[in-house]
Length: 181
Image (cartoon, rainbow, N blue to C red; front, side, top):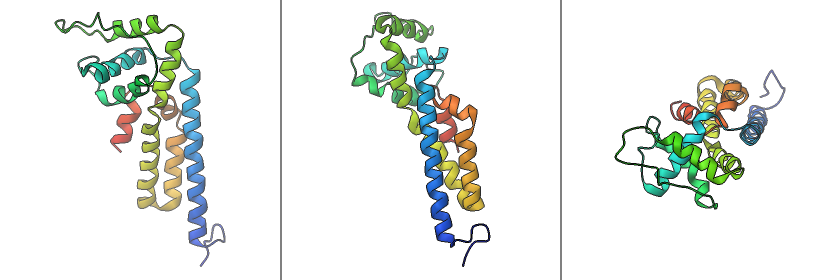
């Protein structure tokens, strides 16, 4: 039996659409990685990265506690393997004021120009979150709407300027979206 749209068998058509979908995911990851490399950090990221290091190195989740620690934790993982400077002397547990901004500025000051490369590596470690979002959209829509609906949903996720922009940042926006799909 052939499909009216392509003249191919359904399994060949699905296989072709699946390969095309994986190509879209690869291009999406490349676009997000490139965006994470060429754009300077936004204000929130400067505080998120040291907060992630505080979780990993000090076991403290109270630094930048207005956001969940998971994304910061994942973003800081590559820095465990790379030499960098950090200063925890200003982190005062007795104070109830938010200290993540001071820690972020200290991190940039201590690491100088290298801080931007460290930020890029931290951003790249968050790429799996957007891949999860893309794959969940694709699979879910594929089950509900068929292969064409799944492919269109995948395209909508992967080509959305908001997804591409926010997926390249160390912020909880895309990870939260991906996990709540």
